[in-house]
Image (cartoon, rainbow, N blue to C red; front, side):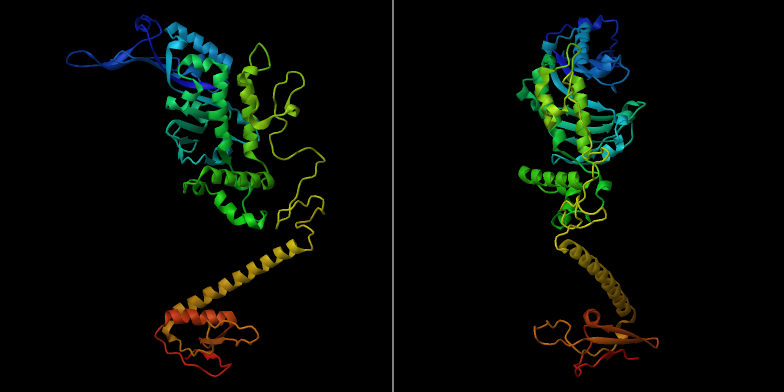
Length: 470
């Protein structure tokens, strides 16, 4: 769980490092005087040991990699392992109570090879993270394998650990990096020994790591490609909610964000084939339980705040060890014989009990008729749009060659009880006549007026048609 650490040692005798056989310090020297310039540094098993000219001594690097003899940090790193790694630092004169923290990381490696979803899908589904602008991470000189969300004191990261550490299996890394220690000062964490305090560490993980997962929205575009199945009142809103730029373009207050976040996640749970966030939280919870469990016992009472995350109840416990487990990660029940839930395509009402081929609820045919009318309206609109394009191209090509006579006022409003006069146009082109009536004719006149404002139009008797002058 703990990975990168940056510590500054106080009351430290540098002779311990100078005489240590595993440390070989290098520094820049002046060509003229031969004096050392800048800091002296040594490297051992993933850690960087620094002696600064002003007397400060620091250690920076991955304590996880140090525990693995400098090979990698792509496996599970439990709290017991962290305690052993800190104790091993004593050979370099590190006293945890005198090692001041200047920065550190907490994170988990999630083995996605055992999941139904690969690492790339998880990374591509990140839509929103606490109103923070997203930026790509560069991993091994390449982009597209991770994202980070940077604030003044903390940086949140999601990236492909297999690509970064050159591992053999799929691995997703989610971590929180504390770049400023004021981010953790309320938890009483100032030195390395405080990270060995189970209570302090549990509260920190719960508030600064797990809550940030809760604040993040994961949305798979392919799961809800269109708004066809969504209730009508949510269709327009949904187009904004699935846009990552929409969440950060305005300075929205927290209440507004939470309300919209809850709406989107409810729509995902109801209409998407799977809830990727629910799957991810299940994987995190299993990894958290493995991190906190000790070899002495299966109950990890010291990490009580972590047990309460994700609202686990007694039904999600193993009978013997009482170790939390995930009953099912996916949002939908996949057991045989379980009828899959169906919803009305218009209003969203559940229609699971209706016929197998039902698409709409049996509410006096309102939803079915509404859907039919919508389809008819869309077809009419498509046909009208095609006709309007034809008219625009006709006017554009022939332009002032027309000599039109107005029969009715196209902007005249229809009066109830008074029969309206029908506008008609006959355009003769190349010896062939084209007819336009009603709305098409009025659209023709409007567009023609825009094109030829200087034309003189004269009023004709009732029901006279306009004809193109050849």
